[in-house]
Length: 416
Image (cartoon, rainbow, N blue to C red; front, side, top):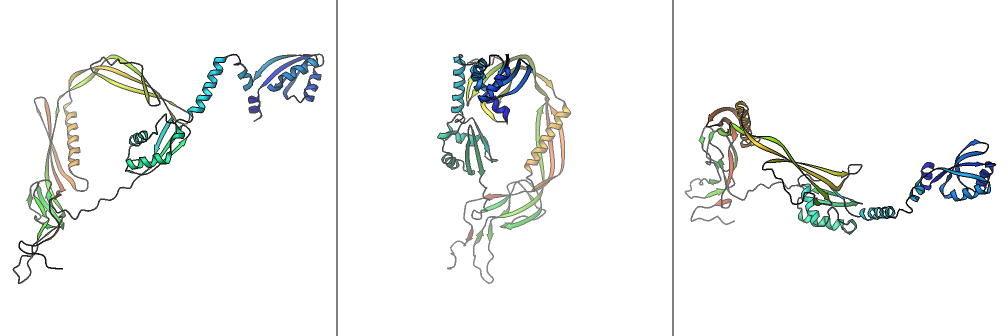
């Protein structure tokens, strides 16, 4: 701590020479001059360090003691600033830096968003930008609570937002709204139809009238469970009491056969780089871009663009709104080369397997057996997948109408 205080107050180291140098030490003690690190060289001289603010007083006391002072070293903040007494441009620059630091600390330099998963950070930042919270905005002029409430009106997926300003950093904390569970629609009549052709192995009817039984063969689009139920006639009565319309629900498991096909040319265009390159530079300050290449573009017909961005980062990982971007364009030409047939078959087979997995919804179908065949024709490789599956083929098909009891024509419901 003592060294830190001496650094800010400044100090000067003198070499003293005289007939009675001890008299100078006594005078410094009487005048309450702060000094330290006194080292005697011999009987006629010594060296010591004096606080910067006492240097004039020590020089006067040295004249009274008939001693000669020779400055050897000076240090600390005051001597450093004294170097700029006549360097007005540097003083002006220092003053400008201090003003820029005082003023710039009130503007937003970085914005961080935390707490979001479904809603993208870019979407949140775009809405805040529309409301005036952006890089370069004047922090004290922002009403954090009002801006957060306005943003929540537009971003309906969010249930909470808080904006906290810490100097040049704006921290945005959000909470996403809980998704309401989907309500089961019971008011729209519907049938259960077949999504694929196959042989029925199991029927589970939850609502409606099943039209198929295990062992029946069905085709895609055929009605499996009907939403219209004919009500049985009362005993000893020939009156038709109508039908009951419901939203049919149930699961129909069947053996199905899927045939999928994919093609790929046996030759492919491969890039060959020519060695020619062009580099374009761009500077981004507070979200504004400055291009150093003007209106000139890239002269290559075919090229790959590699973008490298270097952002000014402060200690602690805070990124500042100042970055330099270098775009490198590498020219290339296309050469036709033959493909490895076995590798192409493996690639198409994997694609067909992934496509089959997408067709069989998770938990509703499994592949029992599959077989691949490959055929070359006119330079094109065709791979065909034939698969035997067990899956739930029932799908809901809504139709217009109303659920409930529908009396027969010419009759009406009995009074309640």
